[in-house]
Amino acid sequence: MLGTAAVGYAYWHLDNNIKSVDINGALGDDRPAKAVTTPTTTASASASAEPLPSGSVNILVLGSDSRSGANQKLGGGNSSGARSDTAMVVHIDEGRKSATVVSIPRDTLVTRPSCPLSSGGSTAVAYHAMFNSAYSVGGPVCAVKTVESLTGVRMDHYLEIDFSGFRKLVDALGGVTVTTKEDIDDDKSHLKLKAGTHHLTGKQALAMARTRHGIGDGSDLGRIGLQQTLVKAMLTQISTKDLLTDPAKLFEVADAVTGSLTTDTGLDSLSELMTFAKSMKGLDADDVKTVMMPVVTAPSDPNRVVAKEPAATDLWESLR
Image (cartoon, rainbow, N blue to C red; front, side, top):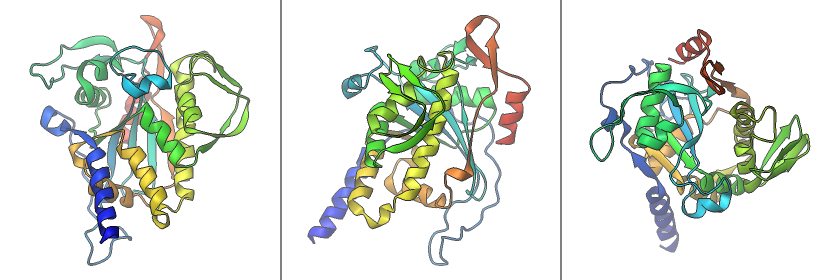
């Protein structure tokens, strides 16, 4: 009875950790069309079990730089509010055996569409706006709508994790191993690393994800390369952990993820997240390709970039 109660509490706790936003309800039908896929049953689904989803899927993954509350301890100043400090479109191919992660530089100038507000009304259309301003003015709904307007690709799901959650997740996994090609010395993120291979703690991994001034030309483009290195490292670390045989470690990892997670309503329960994770069981770091949206320096501002055409359009079309 005690064991059953403990399992029940753990499930309730993790399920209630998850926050969600009704993206579909807010945006309605004025969106790119859903991808048409052929439904199949994955090999891991038995004849008696509900088939796991296997169609292609596009997910907008945001890292929020909220600096309120506990997140102030994580560095980066003390400004109020939050922005999408990291933005990646994750495309999982049909069959869910391979994936492409496309990073969108936050300094990209875009046309930010009018977005509905939860308080009523909507934001105004903004031209030559910073990409990450969409999250600031309209939250997840506006971030999704801006990405769909920029790419022409429908986002099937939305996932957001904040700084605190990222740090806790890396620590729960026992850290991550990365290899850097150049020395990093950034007094903003407080990260100092010599070129080479390092095993990072959660605090160090977060600093690496935020580093931009200590590498390359100090722009957001250099930081994206480090973030993609971290994505691969985390996938590798997850694949080496047999979490199902270590319930305590599984709970620690799940608690770290769900405690700082915001999703769309299609992934806002533990059972939905577990089904989604199981559908990608055969996907590992070697099957994931990381790229950046092609960009060029903005004619109006040397510190900003714009999508490089037709290369950017060709990339997004390949993910539809």
